[in-house]
Amino acid sequence: MSDGSVDLNRPSVRLFAALLVVAVPPLVAFAATDFFAGEWLAQRGYGAGTQLLIGAAITAAWAALVAVFAGRLMAGEARSMLELAERGAASPHAREEAFSAAQRRLAATLDERNRQIAELAAMVRVAPIMEDAAAVARSMAAVARQLTADPTWVMAVLRGPDERSLPPGVYGAEPARPPDPIDEVHRWASTVEMGAGGDSLGARYAIGPWGAFVVVDVVAGEDLRAILMAPWEGRSPPSPADLNVFSLLGQHAATAIEHSLLYVRVRTQAEELNRMAALQTDFLRGVTHDLQTPLTRIGALAAELRADVVDDRAARADLDTIEHQADRLRRMVSQLLTVSRLEAGALTPAQEVFRAEPLVRRTWHALRADRSLELVEEGPDHLVVGDPDRLEQVLWAVLDNAVKYSPAGSSVRVRLASDSAGDGIRARVEISDEGAGMDAATRERAFEQFYRSAIARRLAPDGSGVGLYAARGLVRAMGGHIELESRLGEGTTVAISLPAEGAQEGQEDAGADAADDAAARAQTASGGG
View 1 (cartoon, one colour):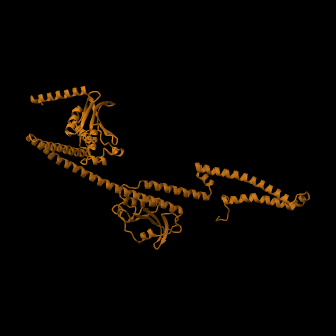
View 2 (cartoon, one colour):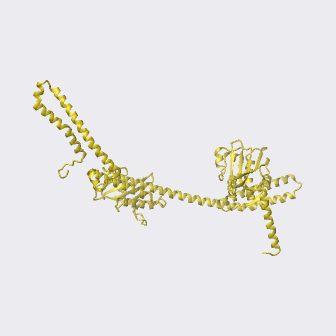
View 3 (cartoon, rainbow, N blue to C red):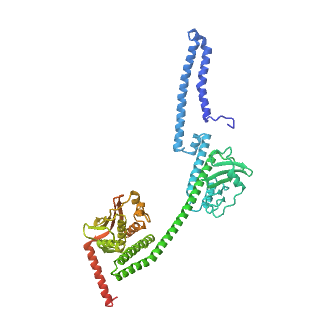
């Protein structure tokens, strides 16, 4: 109302007008009736109370009539506003006519806030958190500048958890520029209290010796202390809505920097773990290579000495023990070497066709176990397709566990069978013992490298914890799979499944290979290429 006119579109003016329309006509009518027809009504027996009652009834009827009429007008206006809110006005001219000046200002402010928040979310989403935290700090300063169209925003980092990734200093939006040193202005801005107009947590408008500033806290935990700030001299103080947007910017900036620092920390730890794993693999590979030769030599010397002491039974028994333990250590070292090759991806099993039954008996004989072996063959005759040396390693690891973790006098059962699968025949080797068994937690981790349960460490203190891990890797390398079933105190069954083929087909293939080898040898002997 700067020009002295009354804006009839204001809700308060319209409400006042409606009250006047309701109240004034009945009052005027009642005063006129009392003045002109008061004596006439009194002569006919109508007293003051009756006249008041008649006036009140007329006033109520008039108010109801005005309420109905005004309600229809307001309902129509509300429907129009709702339609405009849902679909928008048909044209800028129609929108201009539909809304009052205050409504237009509110709509413009809301549009600007929505734009700023959407732009802020889009820019924060592409923050370079996979780089160092300093790049994120510069990115957040650039976001503030772009969001407010103000090129004076900077981020001052006063303290951070990792000074290598985020050294203290003042960061602008320039990507290659090192941070400027912190000065008194930034220290003052970081400690200034919330101003009278700063109702928003984390953002404030402050006036000090160096002028007016907008300061936004960038805080994460106890380690990160930073601020976003811009000079505000000569401008109107920011509104509470502006401070809310700035506060949201500070929260996003703190989250982005925290994520960047976490990413750097995780990446550093991963690189260190990879380095340690490589060192461990190299160490295992070197140790196993160095131990293979002396262990083999010990076993050979024990065999030679045993042949020389034919009459000394005690000496022969000791030499047998030496030879057996040397062979056992050699197999354990071979497991470690296999583990290192599996992890390096340098193990390629051979592809041969063979029977599993002689392999099982040879492995069991090498264990020299004080147990009885029950070997059962079921189903159609078949041949395993794989690497017999690698399968012998698998059998030795599983049978050795069956012996170590079962009581003396118990038996170990090996079942050889074949199953028809969608991709052909599968050979199945099941090894069952009557030992200590496993609980649910141990079953879940049985194939982990170097894992040994408390029961396993008690029953066999000299175990390495790599047997089942290496066995699983070898079986998978040969195109099969291995699984186990076990209950605590009820023994364990390990099932190995490998590719196979019918015995007749395998024998024909073996005969053809032998014929090809004989032909090749004959050609070589006759001087052929």
